[in-house]
Image (tube, rainbow, N blue to C red):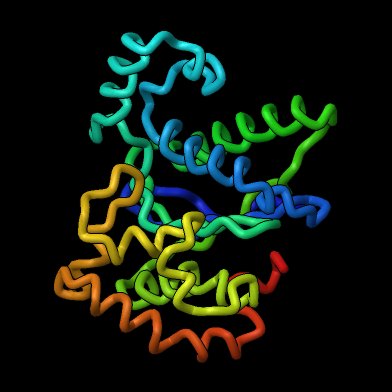
Length: 226
């Protein structure tokens, strides 16, 4: 597998995606999808200096204090804008905030997930292709349309048949954008400002582009991956 021809820079925004090496549907298990979401949240902080499994074993009082430290934004490696977890693959849209932060973040997530999955299934070896795929997002227009691609992925792939189900599906960040409450995982402000801080406008944008995206076989920047 060739290496990535891309350099991650601070304040750079990147579309990150990868699939299982054998195309197995590990994320068909909702519990594994929920674990992946927990890891997305846990490892974004440089203060996550315990393995996730050890963190889970902390007593309630210590765990509460530890979680307060993990919420301090100045320690975040990344800002996460969008995510989509499909049965065989995942998509993330994020911004690097610290030198080497993006690669470290993804590595920690995948290593932790793989360790858990392999122990559970008595197996060895990697689950995902290496290296993960990445495309830099350079303009606001590209950013908007990458969010569209990620948020429509479950529908355009045929995984979800009814488009209305997108707005309540738990393994995509789209439902978080149509909910006005503050989100502890997804940084929604940057995207919503492009839609006048109006979630309804973004919802309309998604709906208006759904059938167009469904008609596309693939986007140019995912051709090599697929």
